[in-house]
Length: 302
Image 1 (tube, rainbow, N blue to C red):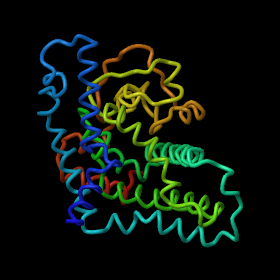
Image 2 (image 1 turned 30 degrees about the vertical axis):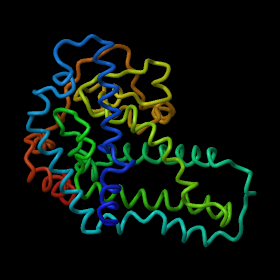
Image 3 (image 1 turned 135 degrees about the vertical axis):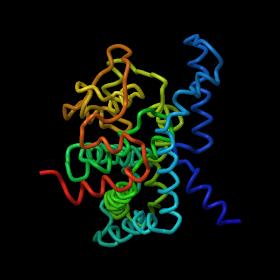
């Protein structure tokens, strides 16, 4: 019974955007938008448009979700996702506690971890776009012709493993340094309180980032937070949208480093890839999705 519970928590828990609670929040917010915007037709048609959910691109979203879950099930991902173990080792290397127990509150610690984590994710995402060797892996995600919450999981398995390993090192070291600075009275759970910020983002806006529903925060808030519309622009095939809005939750990194694209008005956006090198991915064939990125990594074009 415990094994079943652990499986459900791992695959449908608060870190997964397809968690039932996040999908319920997505539906409730979508229903509110449906009413406020006075959309035509039924709510079901608004929420699940046939032209999107019958598109062949969707099959790859689900296929990649299943493949990555199978890899996780055999323990490969778990071996790389060992942030607590890394944190424990780093904490042991710290000579002595550097901070008093009440010097920073748990909320302040959680905020610091969240900011550093979001900053790291910005640079990982930007690197996938800017480094030619690893771009083919991320191109699988950008080959989606339509966006749905399942598109979040449209990730090449090799790319997923690389990202997991990077997360383990960065967050493990970060948690370890904080734990070592505070000493044994600080628990890993307290440090991981940053999940509260992630939970809030997932419950409200994250699933709309990969969807057909347009939500813009306006030019002021979009300098602070990444809106769903901004992430949809990130997936656009228009040249003016290229290499923009890399942020995960916060837009401040894009603003600081010159990659921010602000929404001035609603735009009609087409998704996918247009470069000739990415053409095999736009066939939405699973064999091309799995093999072509690896081939391009091993034999980069001259």
